[in-house]
Length: 312
Ligand code: DGD
Ligand code: CLA
Ligand code: PID
Ligand code: PID
Ligand code: PID
Ligand code: PID
Ligand code: PID
Ligand code: PID
Image (tube, rainbow, N blue to C red; front, side, top):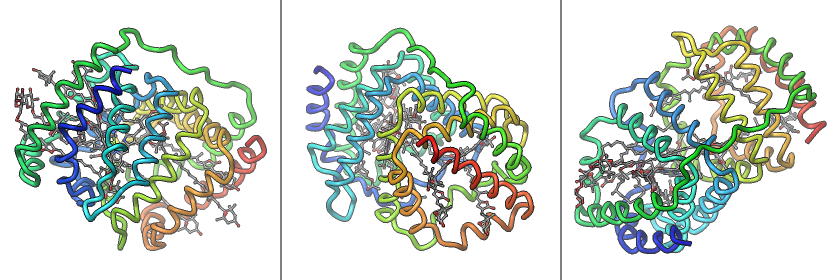
C-alpha cells in the first residue's frame, strides 16, 4: 500500500537518527516539562479517544509490529532493525489514517500543552542535528501520504455487553474496592519514578508481554475499555477520582478484555512484572493507604478473578 511504500522512504530518511537516539535513556520517563498531572491526564484522554476511534485490526497489527521490533533490538542504544523500524512506522501510519485528522491534532495540541518548548531542542542536542532534520523532513513527506489515505468519519462506538457474569461481578468488586481507590493519591509524581534497580531493557521485556496481550485481545472489547476510561476521566473530582458508576464500568470492561485472552497470556504479564517490581514498591504503596481498605479491595479482586477465569 501507499503508506507501506512511504514508510520505506521515511526509513531512508530517519534510520540514521534512530540509531543515534539512546533509547535506554531514563529521561524518557520524565514529564516533558513541569509536572502537571491533570493536564497530562487530559493529553492521555485524547490518546484514549484516538485509540478508541482507531481500526482495532490495525491497532493489533501495530502491536504485533512493536513486539517483532523488540525482538530485533541490538547495540547499546536499544535500536531495532531497519526493517522493523520501517514496519513500525508503516503500522502506526495506518493507525493514524484510520481516525479523522482532528482526533490526531487533538493529541498533538494536548501533548504540546504539557511540553516545555525547550524539550525538542534538547532532544536534538543529544543526536547529530543534521540527521534529526533529515528525519523530520522524512516525517513531513510521510504525513502527506497518511493524510491522503485518511478516513474522514469516525468509526462506530463499541458494543458493550450487558447482564453478563463479569458485569455483575464488577459491581461487587467495585463496592469492595472504591474506598481504597479514594485513599490513593492519583496526582502524585511517584508513578513516574524509575523502578528501583531495573534497567530499561529489563523493563521493556515486561512491557513486551503487555503488548502481546494487547494484540490478542478482542478488538471490540478493547475499544469498549478505552471508551469506559474516557468516560471515567470525564467524571473525576478535584483529587482525580472517578465516580463509583464509572469505576464499576472500567472494572467490568477490563475483566472482559482479560477474559478474551488465554490465561497463560495474562500470567506472562504478571510473572514478568513480578520480576521487575521489588516488594519495597508494593509495600510503599500499601503504607500510604488505609490497610483495611486495601485488604478489602484485594479480597474483592481475588473473588472477581474467579468469575473472569470461569468465562475465559
Ligand atoms: C518534537 C516532538 C517530540 C517531543 C517529545 C515530547 C513528547 C512527550 C510525551 C509524553 C506524553 C505522556 C505519555 C507518558 C505516560 C506515562 C504514564 C505513566 O520534538 C513541535 C512543538 C510541540 C512539541 C510537543 C508536541 C509533540 C507532540 C508529539 C505527538 C504526541 C505523541 C504521543 C506521545 C507519547 C505516547 C506514545 C504512546 O511540534 O517536535 C518537534 C517540533 O516541535 C518542532 O517544531 C516544528 C514546528 O511544529 C513546525 O511548524 C516547523 O516549524 C518545524 O521545520 C521546523 O518545527 C522547518 C521547515 O519548515 C521544514 O520544512 C524542515 O526544513 C525543518 O525545518 C528541518 O529542520
Ligand atoms: Mg510508541 C509515539 C516510543 C510502544 C503507539 N512512541 C512514540 C514516541 C516515542 C515512542 C518514540 C513519543 C515521543 C515522541 O514523539 O518522540 N513506543 C515507544 C517505545 C515503545 C513504544 C519505546 C516500547 C515498546 N507505541 C508503542 C506501542 C504502541 C505505540 C505498543 C501501540 C501500537 N507510539 C504509538 C503512537 C505514537 C507513538 C500512535 C506516536 O504518534 C508517537 C510519535 O512517534 O509521534 C511522533 C518523537 C518521535 C520519534 C523519535 C519516533 C518517530 C520518528 C519519526 C518517524 C521521525 C523523527 C522526526 C523528528 C526528528 C522528531 C518528531 C517530531 C514530531 C513533531 C513528529
Ligand atoms: C503544524 C504547523 C504546520 C505544519 C504541520 C504542523 C504539525 C502537526 C503535527 C505534528 C501533528 C502531529 C500529530 C502527532 C500525533 C500523535 C498521536 C499519538 C497518539 C497516541 C496514541 C496512544 C495510544 C494508545 C494505543 C491504543 C489504545 C489507547 C492508548 C485502545 C483501544 C504544527 C507540520 C502540519 C505526532 C493514540 C495506541 C495503545 C492511549 O501543524 O504549519 O507535527 O505531529 O493506550 O486504544 O486500546
Ligand atoms: C499531521 C498533520 C495533519 C494530518 C495528519 C498528521 C499525521 C500524523 C502522524 C503520522 C503521526 C504519525 C506518527 C508516527 C510515529 C512513529 C513512531 C515510531 C516509533 C518507533 C519506535 C521503534 C522502536 C523501538 C522498539 C522499542 C525500543 C526502541 C526501538 C527501547 C527502550 C502531522 C495525517 C493527521 C508514524 C519507537 C519498539 C523496539 C527504537 O498529523 O494535517 O502521519 O504518523 O528499538 O525501546 O529499547
Ligand atoms: C527541532 C527543531 C526543528 C527541527 C527538528 C527538531 C528536533 C526535534 C527532536 C529530536 C525531537 C526528538 C525526540 C526524541 C524522542 C524520543 C523518545 C523516546 C522514548 C523512549 C521511551 C523508552 C522507554 C522506557 C521503557 C519503559 C520504562 C521507561 C523507559 C519504566 C517504569 C529541535 C529536527 C524537528 C528523540 C519511552 C519502554 C523501557 C524510559 O525540533 O527545526 O531531534 O529528537 O526506560 O518504564 O521504567
Ligand atoms: C498467584 C499465587 C496463587 C494464587 C493466585 C496468583 C495471582 C496471580 C495474578 C495476580 C495474576 C495477575 C494478573 C494481572 C495481569 C495484568 C495484566 C495487564 C495487562 C496490561 C496490558 C496493557 C496494555 C495495552 C493496551 C492495549 C494495547 C497494548 C498496550 C493494542 C492492540 C501469584 C491469586 C492465582 C494483574 C495488556 C491495553 C492499551 C500495551 O497466582 O497461589 O494477582 O494478578 O498498550 O494493544 O492497542
Ligand atoms: C488471575 C489468575 C489466573 C486467572 C486470570 C487472572 C485474572 C486477572 C485479572 C482480572 C486482572 C484484572 C484486572 C482488573 C483491573 C482493574 C483496574 C481498574 C482500574 C480503574 C481505574 C479507574 C480510574 C480513574 C481514571 C484515571 C484517574 C484515576 C481514577 C488520575 C491521574 C488473577 C483470570 C487470568 C480488573 C484506574 C481512569 C479516571 C481512579 O490472572 O489464574 O480478573 O482482572 O479516577 O487518573 O486521576
Ligand atoms: C501488600 C501485602 C498483601 C496485601 C495487599 C498488598 C498491597 C498492595 C498494594 C497497595 C499495591 C498498591 C498499588 C497502587 C498503585 C497505584 C497506581 C497508580 C498509578 C497512577 C498513574 C497516574 C498518572 C499520571 C498520568 C500521566 C502523567 C503521569 C502521572 C506525565 C508525562 C503490600 C493489600 C494485596 C496503589 C499512572 C496518567 C496523569 C503520574 O500487597 O498482604 O496497597 O496499593 O501524573 O504523565 O506527566
